[in-house]
Image (cartoon, rainbow, N blue to C red):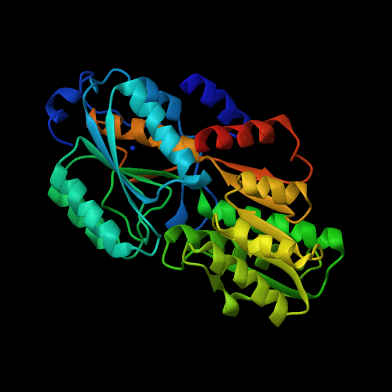
Length: 375
């Protein structure tokens, strides 16, 4: 299973945790360091993510660990959907290879902070072998995760989203979100230039403003726009940050946000979304029959593929969600075995999907992976 997915993920640019088994887990002895290379992203300090990390080395290292019968807890955001199903599929694949039982504790909406806090407390109380977690809110979960780490003492690996300050976890595997935001901006500018737009407005949307993931992506977008808009001749276009739309994970809100922007701004020439619900934000263009606005989204999925194929969405950026779940599980095992990652943030990879590569084999493989994960 892993080899099959590894092949698919490689085609896409490298396209569920501390108790009863702790004492006998480290069959290979002491800790090691330096599995990953030191190549850092060009993002801001708070979003530095290690690229070209030797994740296969972690897998090889973890395979020598006695894991059969272990239990990992997965404190997730919303369960299901093409995005999180990819993560869940990766966790299930790794857990199956290692003989680990996983227990998932999810929320109904990403704004259910109190529910996730309760889930985290229950996970710590259960005292599993390791905990995987995806914080709904980086700031709200910052102190609780640090307290959980201190009380629990076992491996905590963050997936997809980190907390707002260092500490509270052993390592994290996620998208380099600053780079992701830059990619969204670069693709948007390309579309604006292609259309010949030099004036007008661009609407922006996200799922919530408290997530460090969102913050980093928007910072990346802003930095790229500031550095390149003038050179590309689109500096006469205004990005509507003061009217940032927030869906709170509600697809209907995302759709109505796009509709509201088209109504309020007759000069709207672009739309950019920073989360998975950007597909709904941009689908408002289809409902309005508007192919004049350049829409670029994040978290490319099957619905994004359909919108792009029909000409409603210009481009989208895909995350390697399977990688997050699969390697996140192996990273937790490595920590159990004595590996010290020092809170390192590890890049899981990106794939930019455009009209030029929409029908390519690598994108078709990625779409098939999403479809198989959703079954």
